[in-house]
Length: 309
Image 1 (cartoon, rainbow, N blue to C red):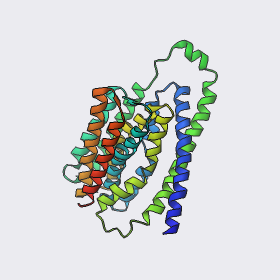
Image 2 (cartoon, rainbow, N blue to C red):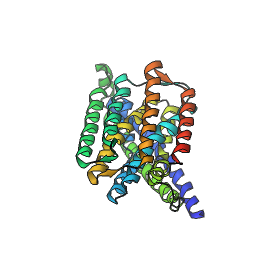
Image 3 (cartoon, one colour):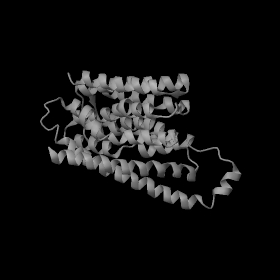
Image 4 (cartoon, one colour):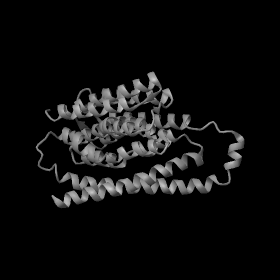
């Protein structure tokens, strides 16, 4: 027990250091490359390597319900706990991304829902979901350029390569450290759930999904506190298509997925949280602390309900 607690403490410390470096590096890289921070948040932070690895590994072992549960739990934790905490700690309301970037993930959510409708995801459906995520990446790249002025480009041309390289190394290094810290956390946390006796889908969504997603709290809170909220909203809206389409599809390609009731219920809860966040951003153009409270309470309510399934 003490060894597991020690792993959790060490993992949390490493995770914080890595997230701090990744956020600083990504902000500098966006400036150097004249790319909107939202795009880097969606592509670099939205692809959660720990969550991806856990889902694919579980699928390869034949634990497909656990795989889907972990996919769902990653997104649920991000939209409920991580973004909720970030909004509560934000010094001012978080501005909305462009409408197309808010609404596009909903299409991937629907695609994933169709694939999960019969509680089974085939390899063919998995390929289609992966292609849907590739299309989302294309959308990001087409809409992600800053409309920079020629004079600004000329002024920054000489220092951009140097600062861009330094920022890229800081970002990549930070993400590697984040992955290492998350791995330590999962190792320590897994010792507490071996004999839980809970449904595989719930363990994946409420336990494993949380452990591999603790870095998401920092990747939401730190950009907002550091004055780069687009990194946080990019992570938020980029993770949904990455997991509802890309990771789900990749896991199904590895092995067709059977889905239990806990994971299916979690997917519905995930859809509700996304709908609430998207509606607030579209209606008011920003999100404040009251939404953070609603998201945290909703996540807690889902945990209470899912634990009984």
